[in-house]
Length: 132
Picture 1 (cartoon, one colour):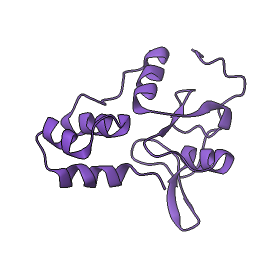
Picture 2: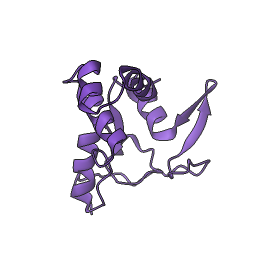
Picture 3: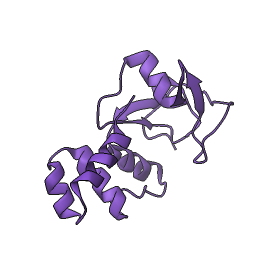
Picture 4: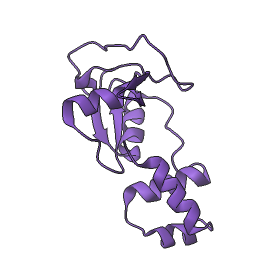
């Protein structure tokens, strides 16, 4: 299935993988997911609150034509197009907080109140989501 009409084949990473199956490499003294590094090399920094999606639905792929910048919600829509199980964003309390942070429509105090947690917990979560 190729809902994005990709013309080039996947360029699969053959090096180290994370426990979730993504390519992983050390670059300029930092660990990077390979697809994020490829995006960075071609397009510059990844905007805050954005992720790099695999349009080909292949976690090992680093072909730039197969990568797109977007949101977790975009990624879930991609998964539906591929007929893959949709990710868990919104299905657990932590992931619901992540979705709220990434959408940027609520303030930290509003997110903390909505999810009955502390502002500090939301700030800590936000730091884990900031791109390098």
